[in-house]
Amino acid sequence: MSRIPIEQPLKRIAPFLWRAKGALLCFAIWGLFGWASFIGYGAESVERFPPPDLGENYQFPFSSQLPAREGWKAWIDTSVLLLALALAAWIALKWRNRKAMAWLSVACLAYFGFYRLGCVCPIGAIGNITLGIFDPSYAVPLYVIAFFALPLVFALLCGRVFCAAVCPLGAMQSLVMLKPARMPRALDRGLGLIPYFYLGIAVLLAAVGTMFIICRYDPFVSFWRVSARFHIWIWSGAVLLISMFVGRPYCRYLCPYSVLLAMLSRFSFWKVKTTPDKCVICGLCRDACPYGAIREADEEFRPTS
Ligand code: SF4
Image (cartoon, rainbow, N blue to C red):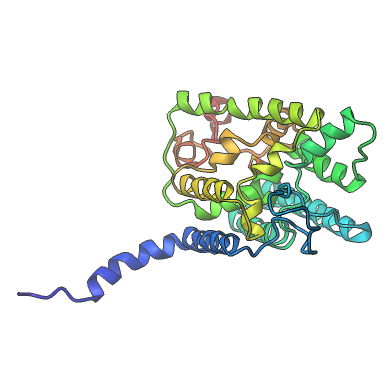
């Protein structure tokens, strides 16, 4: 009986493993936080002080928010956000360098995701801002307002640079992307309505002070904190898994902040375009874009020479 040399399967599998390194790394961390949560480690109850003894049947409420950063530390985060947005805008509009954009995205994921543990984030700040509007006794910190507003201001000026390179949730999904499928247009449009409903529900629940649903069901915050309840752990794993085969599913079919960004970016002063002077309207970029973000090229951009 002839024996298959061990190198052959290894040679075949190695390129796949290399391509899937982002996904493998994320799933390893996902497994780690599931295990950590299972054995009771982690920051789900956020503060680690011994809780008061309220009887063995009492269940402490789940907290999806970290204690606020205070004073100058909060403003460091805001400055980093401002700097990252400005850098992303410059790379997108002037330098037009995809690699630089990708590296900026990784740096922002490291800072806002793994270092700052996903808090405060502009998406979750929707809840704070809404409650601040409807409940005068709830004071929204100034830096939370800045976090909410800065990406929107940039969207109005130069498009969704926040999504392109600064948002850690977007970066997580791009990191695990392996073989994105092209979504049928009707399905894409149908699912694309969900963020509008989700935004409406999130605003309603925050306005009546019931809960900040966006923070509670954020798919990656628990991931960065290495802590989650079981259903959130499953939810995170599902979003990671789908992100391997559908480009940025959370961004396209759930993110409520994307509704605001999309509305403002329509009127953006400077727009990111394909290279109009070189475009031959072949449609390759539109077909290759894993997020379905490139619209049909316009005849007016066809080069004349
Ligand atoms: S659509 Fe939402 S989750 Fe996605 S990158 Fe933009 S803000 Fe972040």
